[in-house]
Length: 78
Image 1 (spheres, rainbow, N blue to C red):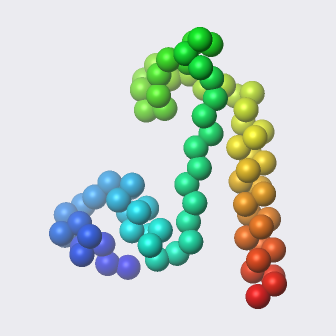
Image 2 (cartoon, one colour):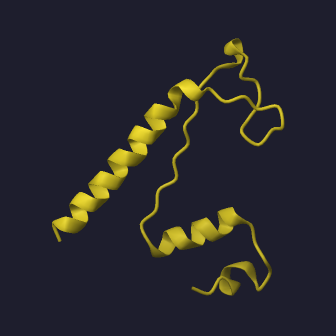
Image 3 (cartoon, one colour):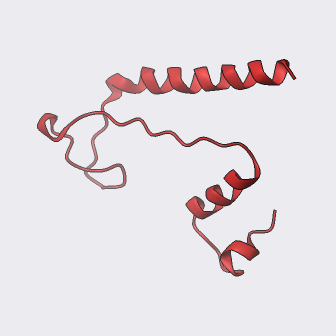
């Protein structure tokens, strides 16, 4: 995989690499968002004052497990 065609030979950020890879292989990008400003969640994920609501992590784990199981199921049926 040669990223120089995309980046002009310059180093790029991870998101640009991910976008390039996603054109070559099946990919997924998921974000688990929880909490409202009314509940005190005022800052985005890259802000130094971000707070995370750990009570929803099981939903993200279940989504990843489901996607992995579906992928394995499809690869077994080929």
